[in-house]
Image (cartoon, rainbow, N blue to C red; front, side, top):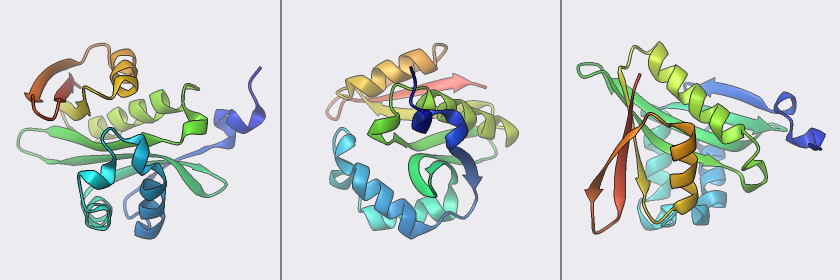
Length: 159
Protein backbone atom coordinates (compact mmCIF):
# COMPACT_ATOMS: atom_id res chain seq x y z
CA UNK A 1 0.00 0.00 0.00
CA UNK A 2 1.30 3.45 -0.92
CA UNK A 3 1.80 6.07 1.72
CA UNK A 4 -0.30 9.19 1.01
CA UNK A 5 2.86 11.31 1.29
CA UNK A 6 4.24 9.50 -1.75
CA UNK A 7 1.22 10.01 -4.02
CA UNK A 8 1.39 12.14 -7.14
CA UNK A 9 -1.50 14.28 -5.92
CA UNK A 10 0.59 15.54 -2.99
CA UNK A 11 3.40 16.71 -5.26
CA UNK A 12 3.50 19.70 -7.54
CA UNK A 13 5.06 19.43 -10.99
CA UNK A 14 6.14 22.83 -12.16
CA UNK A 15 7.97 24.31 -15.15
CA UNK A 16 9.73 27.48 -14.11
CA UNK A 17 11.53 29.73 -16.55
CA UNK A 18 13.39 31.67 -13.86
CA UNK A 19 13.97 29.38 -10.86
CA UNK A 20 15.32 30.58 -7.53
CA UNK A 21 19.11 29.99 -7.71
CA UNK A 22 19.48 29.61 -3.94
CA UNK A 23 16.84 26.86 -3.79
CA UNK A 24 18.38 25.04 -6.77
CA UNK A 25 21.87 25.33 -5.24
CA UNK A 26 20.70 23.98 -1.87
CA UNK A 27 18.93 21.03 -3.52
CA UNK A 28 21.94 20.13 -5.68
CA UNK A 29 24.28 20.47 -2.71
CA UNK A 30 22.04 18.08 -0.77
CA UNK A 31 21.97 15.62 -3.70
CA UNK A 32 25.67 16.02 -4.61
CA UNK A 33 26.85 12.55 -3.59
CA UNK A 34 23.95 10.84 -5.38
CA UNK A 35 25.66 11.63 -8.67
CA UNK A 36 28.28 9.22 -10.05
CA UNK A 37 30.80 10.79 -9.77
CA UNK A 38 29.67 13.49 -7.28
CA UNK A 39 28.47 16.61 -9.06
CA UNK A 40 30.89 18.90 -7.21
CA UNK A 41 33.84 16.89 -8.58
CA UNK A 42 32.73 17.75 -12.12
CA UNK A 43 31.70 21.39 -11.95
CA UNK A 44 31.72 24.50 -9.76
CA UNK A 45 28.25 24.18 -8.33
CA UNK A 46 27.48 27.90 -7.95
CA UNK A 47 28.52 28.64 -11.56
CA UNK A 48 26.50 25.69 -12.84
CA UNK A 49 23.37 26.78 -10.96
CA UNK A 50 23.73 30.30 -12.35
CA UNK A 51 23.94 28.91 -15.90
CA UNK A 52 20.95 26.62 -15.35
CA UNK A 53 18.82 29.42 -13.97
CA UNK A 54 19.69 31.72 -16.88
CA UNK A 55 19.73 29.32 -19.85
CA UNK A 56 17.80 26.12 -19.11
CA UNK A 57 14.16 25.24 -18.87
CA UNK A 58 13.79 23.76 -15.40
CA UNK A 59 11.09 21.35 -14.29
CA UNK A 60 10.58 20.71 -10.62
CA UNK A 61 8.83 18.33 -8.31
CA UNK A 62 7.94 20.28 -5.19
CA UNK A 63 6.96 18.84 -1.84
CA UNK A 64 5.78 21.35 0.74
CA UNK A 65 7.35 24.09 -1.43
CA UNK A 66 10.74 22.37 -1.35
CA UNK A 67 12.50 21.01 -4.44
CA UNK A 68 12.59 17.20 -4.38
CA UNK A 69 13.07 16.61 -8.11
CA UNK A 70 14.72 18.62 -10.86
CA UNK A 71 15.15 18.31 -14.59
CA UNK A 72 17.02 20.99 -16.56
CA UNK A 73 16.88 21.07 -20.35
CA UNK A 74 18.61 23.26 -22.88
CA UNK A 75 16.27 23.83 -25.82
CA UNK A 76 18.35 26.50 -27.52
CA UNK A 77 19.68 24.63 -30.59
CA UNK A 78 17.05 26.03 -32.91
CA UNK A 79 18.93 25.16 -36.11
CA UNK A 80 19.39 21.43 -35.44
CA UNK A 81 16.33 21.27 -33.15
CA UNK A 82 18.22 19.35 -30.47
CA UNK A 83 17.34 19.49 -26.80
CA UNK A 84 19.88 18.46 -24.17
CA UNK A 85 18.92 17.19 -20.72
CA UNK A 86 21.79 18.55 -18.64
CA UNK A 87 20.54 17.60 -15.19
CA UNK A 88 18.10 15.05 -13.80
CA UNK A 89 17.80 14.23 -10.11
CA UNK A 90 15.13 12.93 -7.74
CA UNK A 91 15.28 12.86 -3.94
CA UNK A 92 15.91 9.37 -2.55
CA UNK A 93 12.53 9.04 -0.84
CA UNK A 94 10.76 9.47 -4.21
CA UNK A 95 12.80 6.97 -6.19
CA UNK A 96 11.20 3.82 -7.62
CA UNK A 97 7.72 5.31 -7.18
CA UNK A 98 7.12 6.65 -10.69
CA UNK A 99 8.18 10.25 -10.06
CA UNK A 100 11.36 10.02 -12.14
CA UNK A 101 9.46 8.54 -15.08
CA UNK A 102 6.84 11.27 -14.86
CA UNK A 103 9.50 13.99 -14.67
CA UNK A 104 11.43 12.47 -17.58
CA UNK A 105 8.26 12.29 -19.71
CA UNK A 106 7.41 15.89 -18.83
CA UNK A 107 10.95 16.85 -19.91
CA UNK A 108 10.33 15.19 -23.28
CA UNK A 109 7.03 17.05 -23.58
CA UNK A 110 8.74 20.39 -22.91
CA UNK A 111 11.27 19.67 -25.67
CA UNK A 112 8.45 18.74 -28.05
CA UNK A 113 6.53 21.91 -27.18
CA UNK A 114 9.63 23.91 -28.13
CA UNK A 115 9.66 22.14 -31.51
CA UNK A 116 12.81 20.12 -30.82
CA UNK A 117 13.19 16.96 -32.92
CA UNK A 118 15.89 15.18 -30.88
CA UNK A 119 16.47 14.81 -27.15
CA UNK A 120 19.98 14.05 -25.82
CA UNK A 121 21.46 13.31 -22.41
CA UNK A 122 24.66 11.88 -20.96
CA UNK A 123 24.89 9.16 -18.37
CA UNK A 124 27.92 7.71 -16.65
CA UNK A 125 28.17 3.98 -17.38
CA UNK A 126 29.26 3.43 -13.76
CA UNK A 127 25.92 4.79 -12.55
CA UNK A 128 24.05 1.49 -12.82
CA UNK A 129 20.82 2.82 -11.30
CA UNK A 130 20.66 5.66 -13.84
CA UNK A 131 21.45 3.26 -16.68
CA UNK A 132 18.60 0.96 -15.61
CA UNK A 133 16.21 3.89 -15.26
CA UNK A 134 16.93 5.23 -18.75
CA UNK A 135 16.73 1.76 -20.29
CA UNK A 136 13.22 1.49 -18.87
CA UNK A 137 12.03 5.06 -19.34
CA UNK A 138 13.45 5.53 -22.82
CA UNK A 139 13.17 2.15 -24.50
CA UNK A 140 13.58 3.69 -27.97
CA UNK A 141 16.78 5.53 -27.05
CA UNK A 142 20.03 5.00 -28.89
CA UNK A 143 23.36 5.26 -27.13
CA UNK A 144 27.02 5.70 -27.95
CA UNK A 145 30.14 5.95 -25.81
CA UNK A 146 31.59 9.43 -25.99
CA UNK A 147 34.51 9.26 -23.59
CA UNK A 148 35.94 5.89 -22.62
CA UNK A 149 38.16 7.40 -19.89
CA UNK A 150 35.21 8.87 -18.03
CA UNK A 151 32.71 6.19 -19.04
CA UNK A 152 30.19 8.66 -20.42
CA UNK A 153 27.46 7.49 -22.74
CA UNK A 154 25.45 9.86 -24.93
CA UNK A 155 21.84 8.76 -25.22
CA UNK A 156 19.27 10.16 -27.60
CA UNK A 157 15.63 9.91 -28.57
CA UNK A 158 13.91 11.11 -31.68
CA UNK A 159 10.92 13.19 -30.69
